[in-house]
Each structure stands twice: as C-alpha cells, then as structure tokens.
Length: 223
Image (cartoon, rainbow, N blue to C red; front, top):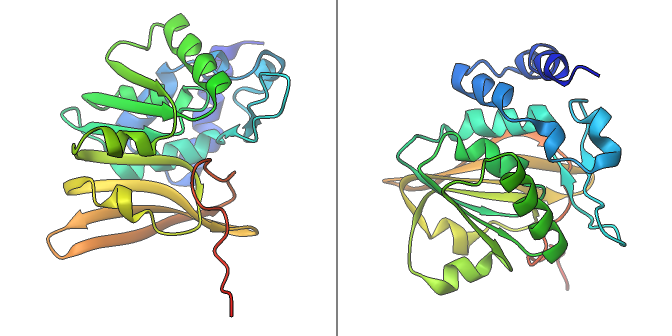
C-alpha cells in the first residue's frame, strides 16, 4: 500500500469535504504519518474514515483514535497559534498530540492508562515528534493539582457528561477548551471560549466518543 497516496486521498476525500479548508491544518495532516500511531494490525486502515480501537495490551483499552476528519475539525475550530500553550488530557496513541505539537509552543499531555502512555511515548519518539512534549502517565486532574498554571488551549480527548468547570477555570483570557460532551446515542464536539463576558460554548459537530477515564460517566437525575 502506498501510504503517502493514502494520506493524500484522506485529505482530498475525507477532510476537505467535511468543511475543513484551513491550509495550515491540511498541511499538518499531510505531514504526520498516522500509520505510525495505530496498532500494527490496523496499519492498512490508518487513513480510512473510521475510528481505530486502541487495543495494544492483553485487555481492550476502551479508547480509540478519532476518525481523521474529526481531528481536522477540532484543529480548525481551536485555531491554535505558535505562541500558545496546550494541556491535553487523554494522549491515546499520541497522534492528536503530534498534530497539536505542530501548531503550538508547548503541549503537556496526560494519559491515565499506563500501557497507552507507553505506546504513545514510543510512537512519538520513533517518529521524531517528541521534541518539546511534556508527557505524563497519570490522571489529567493531576495537572490542575500540581500547579496553578493556566493554558491557552485545553483538549479533553474523550467524552464527558458535565461541563468541565475545573478545567475551564484554567483557561487564559481568549483560551479555548475542546471536549466531547453528552451521552449515547448523541454527543457534541464542543469548543468553549473564555471571553470578557464569561465562557461561550459552541457545538461544532455531532459524534460518539468513548468516555474519558477519571471523569464522571453518568449524568442522571435522581428523585
């Protein structure tokens, strides 16, 4: 399989038709070798329009690599700038981390699953995309406990059922937070922006995503 051609086809047949026209985003997607971040058994499907299960150990992780077009829409919506700092919760395979590293000054990324954390670190090192990355194996909430730092962009790479107020409180003025919010069968990919008036949410597409470990998973009323 010609993986470079597959990457080109992904951009032309999946990404552009999904209303992604930001030249910088398209350039980044063309540079990062997605096939280096999927489990070996999925290498031939690395550029397919589908999520890829991240089953790398003896048990299913319950996590996935997003379909390429969703990564693209996320990057386009966040408009990360070269001087900005990013906190990512849910490193996963490291693919999204690699994409974000191309358009930010510094990215700190946390992965609660130790096997996935090791998988991501190995992928990023093997591809030479680990320079300047601050990778951690652990619960992303530890980033909030360890420092009172704020970030320009925060990415929660799994689904949450309630507004992540503790992370929103750590956004710089003008900062943006991306997450998937809701419960099956419908979730929203949402960007929150910190403005002078407060926090402004914007839904950018409907989707389904696995729950982010370490966050509440049920939002039901009890009487």
